[in-house]
Length: 369
Image (cartoon, rainbow, N blue to C red):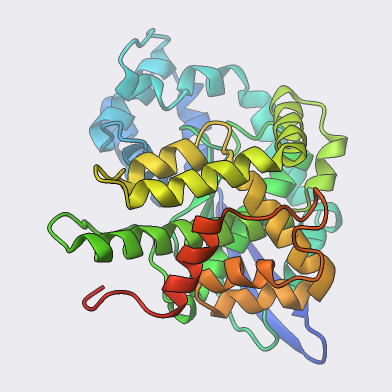
């Protein structure tokens, strides 16, 4: 059962594996979200109080993600945006609008109810997520994951390659969407726990000045890591649940995913072009490729999901689970070895340059990478 300790929801997930039972502890802290919701309904709040709210761990995640979007973010800008929203001041600067506090303010009662629903429905929330995650977690795993519920910023949820994850109720305004986003981000935290096994990192370090071949190798490896991570997380979240969605955000997610999967060939093409762009005379930066493929309509999610689903369909949940501990290029190559690969629209052929890049990675990156 989800129990409230101060303002933290501490959850013990007992995940049953094939032949053993093991414990994964998940602590979900709602302090940051609650503080923002309280502030937005307090027209007498001070700037100092807003600065303290900005410094809370969950809200630091919002600031970090905003910087990833290449939008200047820090405690001071967060606090000013929150202060202005609480006092009803209209903001025009992107650095303040990006927190969407004006939108969150309009939904405070609904968002408080959503937090209550999470606590009050352990069987329909915690237990279902628990069972789903258990299917795709290695037997014998002992994980300690930290989640933060937040209320502001862009994106419904995110992780940074570690065992922390963030759930934005400001953007996930429906119980079923909250469930899928929680499962998705929780699985990213599971992936983060095994990042060393895969040899992956959250952010690609600067590659300027390195030999061209080494740059290509590093950028391609990072692309395949993101393909594996997002594809498997979307599969684990169980997108069939979105059939129950009725909110604007939930309906949009359902339509985007359904349409994207039906047109997975365009996602295959974008993946192929992304791989080629790294080896161009004037090579694309990794950030630019990532922005096109994984933000907005997130076109690369589609081929990534199709690949993950194909692996799970043929090899079962543990077949997909095995890639938690393998370099991500094996995910690309493993998909191409499936019996149904290339035989129907649900198993599209990958581009020749994509496959060749995975094969090169399997032979080892240039010296010094």
